[in-house]
Amino acid sequence: MAALYDHRLRPTQPATPRADAFTVHRQAVDGDLHLAYVREGVGGYPLLLLHGYPETKRIWWRNIDPLARAGHEVVVPDLRGYGDSDLAGDDVYDIARYSRDCHALMAALGHERFGVVAGDVGGAVAVDMVHRFPDTVEKLVFFNTVPPILLDEFVAAGIDLTTIRAMGDGPTTDYQVDQGRDGDALIEELDTPERRRRWVRGFYTHRLLASPGAFSTDDLDFMTEPFGDRDRLRSAWAPYEARHGRPQSEPPLVADFVDVPTLVLYGPDDAAVGPDFIHCCEVAFRNRVGPVAVPGAGHFLQWERADIVNPLVEHFFAELRP
Image 1: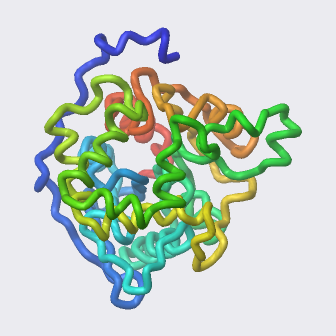
Image 2: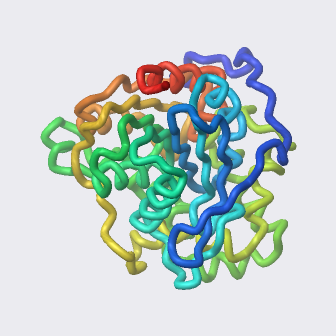
């Protein structure tokens, strides 16, 4: 797909709202810990948009207004430790706790059932929510992340586990080892806000997770600004550290089939999540639409091709809107 698409001809994307375009709210979800979130379109069908790493709620800036105008109540939190949300006083950052936080947020907003759109770490959180809180997630949009971990089923389907790039330690995913195994040493090297932001900037540029030309200089400044904070960058590495022995509050529920209706999207210009993602999702999601490859998009497809993602999400959830 990437070789067939001329990125110079990619349509102009929707204009990015100002950094202060949306009101940021706060909600206690775990004792004194508060999540920061944007909430637009109150009264519409609720959609929870979950970011990953190295992202914050800002990665959804091009999606919030279009989905709200389409009739959705759009809820976009920063996960604990990210962006404007609180750092955890007990230093607990893992998939299960992210999942519980987001479920508590939606419950506090009055939503017992809702849809989820998620990629990267947010995708793992969404799968955990499906299993941890049955009958809560009515539909799911899932993209560019680690697929549900069904290793025996993948092998039975003929998938070579060594090709699953998002789960490996290859040359394009060396950062997973650096952050997961040597996080303390790495954060000491990144000893200024500028160096920390440069580290994050690399994920949008030379690490080739994003489609060529998808992020302007202004876009990069916008995305990296929250990671100038040392503690927030360090806390964001916790899911990678879990692969190297970091204790978790609970095991994540990410090793089972997903049966809720799911739209699977894939941005092919992604050095971290390879085309094996498509085959794995065909096995793991038993009630799916797609996988649909989104041309001219990589890891951050909600930003890179908002012109495609927004109408796909709108139509996928259309039957649930009031």
